[in-house]
Image (tube, rainbow, N blue to C red; front, side, top):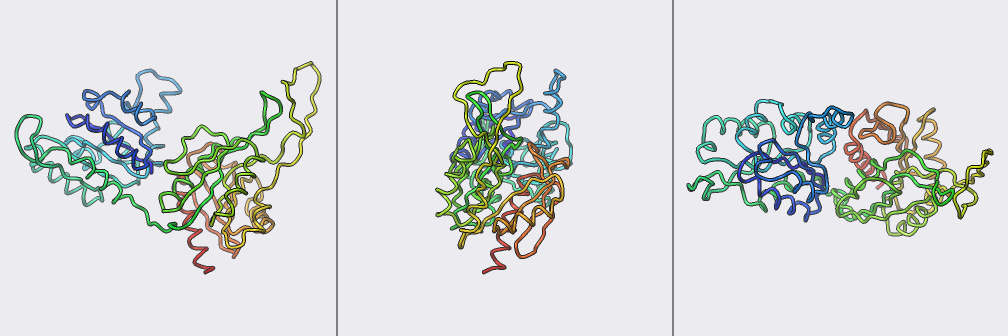
Length: 401
């Protein structure tokens, strides 16, 4: 599960370090956003080192550059990719911003941009907690579906005893999992997902590959794991961090991917082939770097193994899902591959469409079923597409019980 941890400015901010660790121990991938005041209590470098992800602190970096322009829209990317937004500690100021739709920093803007469940763990002075304005803001947030983990009673920073102390961290973690727990409709399934490109070597320094980032496959593996499946992710080379608690198998070439798919396929109940496997590889691999000599080079290519075509006819009781990235006659080619490869479902997309191609956080797909069903999904985050593909798997299995 991918969680965005928002840290705001109060003395309890130091507890975010331990909270992050507890969430990681439960298999969560953590990204952190800190307000300006939070940085007075704990440094971004500490949370960056522990989370192994960049900590977001500024909406608009002071130095204008291409990188700073990208940071300015990172709140949208994060908002679309997370499974939950947890703000702990949440100050009275941030609670007021959320309740009234203010968006003047990274965290409050991200709150308005996300559709993920939101959990707030307030921490503040006794009188601030009991103030009518704070209580009104909390009631308003509750009506909007925000989960509130009320603070505990105890000795507060100013030395008085009362309510306002950040709730016990285990209590916060349990609330996160209670709020975000998806239906465990894949419990008992073993799902094998392939992802990323393959690399077909030409010589020790050159290779053939494609533009696949692997994001769609990684989101599918994350979704299947969160819904109770034992999940194996077989991935070509990518820059992505494998989802927590997923069995990860790294491969490089189409031949290696075939070997691992055939190894895990007998155990699997569902195979989802989201990888963009290279269609061709060099006939011969040069053992030394091919030198440039001013002459043309002819590279003879031969087909790589068609893994789906091999496993489809021998699937028996397994459910097999394929992917097809197309540039023309999208549905026609999708239906053709669905039939030729004996698949149950085929996910097709037009990679020339904006927001649907390689290396994108979103996708636009049509899910074809061998019984004639077609489900079109408009542009949406790949995390949402992944869950909808799993929903269609569940629906297909119900139709064929």
